[in-house]
Image 1: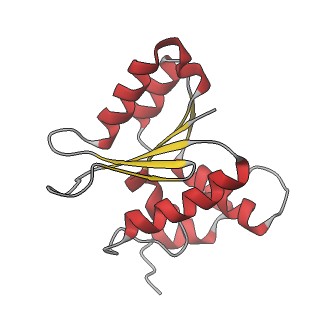
Image 2: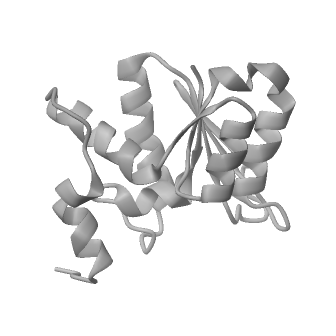
Length: 151
């Protein structure tokens, strides 16, 4: 089951990665490549604001990163990708905190996962722990971000 990921939606929920970092996209790509290599699935991660003159796509193992350029944004690129898959959209999982993207994915038959939940799954995988479903209330970092603790 391939994954379609809104990269800038996911970064705020990832430990050690911040949207303020110059290399935030590359850091996320590295984390995702390690995760998807472990679970042996493919993913495409979409980022807004690709720089003119830079590569529009980076491939690393199980992960392909695509950088959109204005006027296209990652949300639209994900929807376009689902449209192109036709009936095979039901085989995809979309990772986004954007409700419109999640609703569109589900309308096309794809599975939708909120970014915070997917980030928690990556953390659990890194810790090699089982356990039940994690909610944002269980994640201290989530609440620290919500209330602006920058320590």
